[in-house]
Length: 106
Image (tube, rainbow, N blue to C red):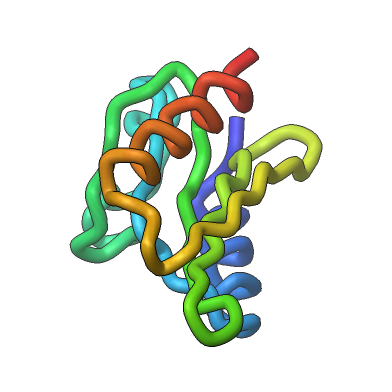
């Protein structure tokens, strides 16, 4: 299980490279194990109950694109990445993000 200081290191690394924390997936055991409240650690981003511990990061990618990365928290570092075009509907983006969450959880 990942510790609070390890999550802080991951968040700092992504921030250093221009990524914005967009959402967090947390399992019940991880929520209980965190020192302090999840809100203090993650700020005001959406925290979603999940069987998988992961963080969604996003950033601009070129002129009209946005990259989203789903980074597993804990265990062997692993991430899934998707690049969205500016004209992609939010419904399509959300469907793609849900598929990525499913793939990461397998």
